[in-house]
Length: 472
Image 1 (cartoon, rainbow, N blue to C red):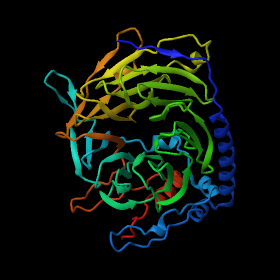
Image 2 (cartoon, rainbow, N blue to C red):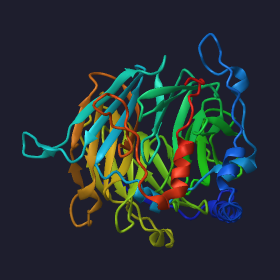
Image 3 (spheres, one colour):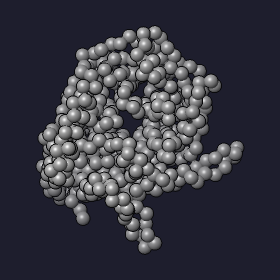
Image 4 (cartoon, one colour):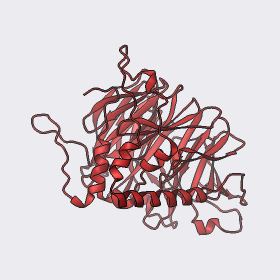
């Protein structure tokens, strides 16, 4: 089983390269941060630059009034508070316990929260090692279909869910508490993500993209440009820029440091999904059963023609920095391709084969969504399907593939059956910072033991957030 990825000659649409935006954004933020640190006013500036929304309750439903909507900081304020995550901080916040929380939404309005301890595995019927999901919460979170869900990383502090009811529900996973609803959009919510621990990004069928600060859930920016529904958004690993695709058949680039659009290009077809590679050096656009891969210079590198309609795309890489594309599709599989290196992409444009490394098996209906996480240098992938099952896979053997064997066939290490729910979206985060309960049932707060993490502790104070409806 193999499928060809045809290498196209470099086609450069009239869209400024991402590299130029990344470069200018980096120079501005590094200069600004240095000045703030020198003045000793870093924390004060961050707090002053975010306008808190007016917390007027609507007596009928307890939600913020319409006066809360539309509040946003200026573009300069957005750049001053948007922080770029680093590998150093991520490693400090690594989940040493090996516990994951998988959250999935479905058409039936329900959110499923499942915890799994990766260190506790049992022998299966055929001698294989398997882990088990433990339900943490299962409840109807919205009044209609749940279409998007996202959890903050690292630490798994925040959970956001959105759907066709046009609202975004915010949950505190540590306290297992709903904070309230964000009513910024006038259409179904199509995308949610946490580009950093302190920022939430949402997209909607109303054609807008919104950026919020998790300290008080104020709207920092509303990005307008799409003429119709926004199908998907992908934030660059640096958190400085993002890409979006929509029903208007355009690909748009947004400068998150300034809070405004940078450029756009007509794709000639509707982009149904967009995603950056793990390195941020390439990105991919989904359209029906094809996956177009571009460089940051907006040159079309390859096109993967998958045998079935693609539902979702994800990327991961191994210790040798080889990058893999994970394609979830209507063929009931997650197919993993090995992408050519950037040096090979710079070749003469001859056709080449993009090999299939493995398939993730087990689903009996189309795979709707996937997500991945790295725990203790091991990559795990979770998938949900219209068959009502949630799977978790260990990619250790796959990422060690040398090309000297046939594609691998991998079964899930853990399975949870929702008994018929039509699952639509999934997210996974670590449980390293989840509050554990004392014997009296009260939450036990995390202790900071490393004084060298002063800036990080300062960020944690902001991360505590506030109840959106103003409740104590």
